[in-house]
Image 1 (cartoon, rainbow, N blue to C red):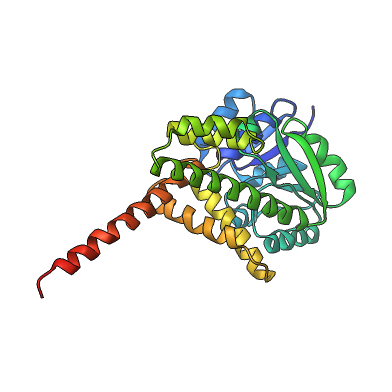
Image 2: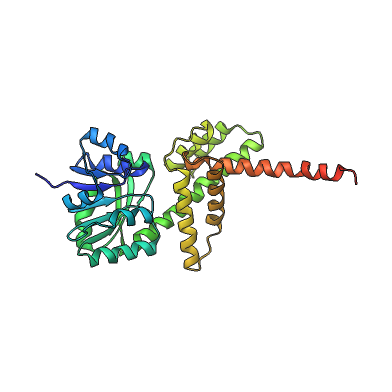
Length: 301
């Protein structure tokens, strides 16, 4: 019987990626919140009782969790010898490079494998994979990603795949944020948002992302494909990496502020297109200022 592939981390993206892997490979899954594994169990995946059990049973383990702290917690008491760890979580490049060294020192193999795309492309197998690691190990891992990725690009050695992921995120986040600003400009000028949507969808800048986010901005339906907290985390990773390398990141600085404001406004479970809420709040604040000043001027001395 074919040994299963391990998959740890069944959040918004992880569950979608795991469901695609399951279409062609036996899968042993684990998640810190056990209920998240139920849909995959119903689809035929085996569910482990601990992360350590996944590593004990699987030669190859995919990891797609929230952040570096989650990775450290999962790997704390795990034997990494003779195991290929395919790390798909978006983390700082420095952490990823150190993790690669840690896995190698333990007698295992490490593959950086961040992806470009959100939940819907993951569910349809249309992600773009970015890999970094030893070529011989990538030769084994790359075919496993066939159900998940429409294209896989080898980026070099860790942390070059993670750095490439941050470069991709820079474009994605600024595009979607600019789109939200465009719709906010239209609504504050009394323009028909549906007409704007049609023009943008038919124009040379249109893409799968712009069409999906335009539809969300018109309908106000922000079911998460890439949730506000995750986008904020990624924006901050870009900004921090830019600062570390003494590189300007003017647009991403502004984006990070806007997503932080959207999160503070209570949009933690909504898609990144809900960043328009931050624009609306800023405009409301801007329009309150004159009346406040006027009241102050009218007060009797």
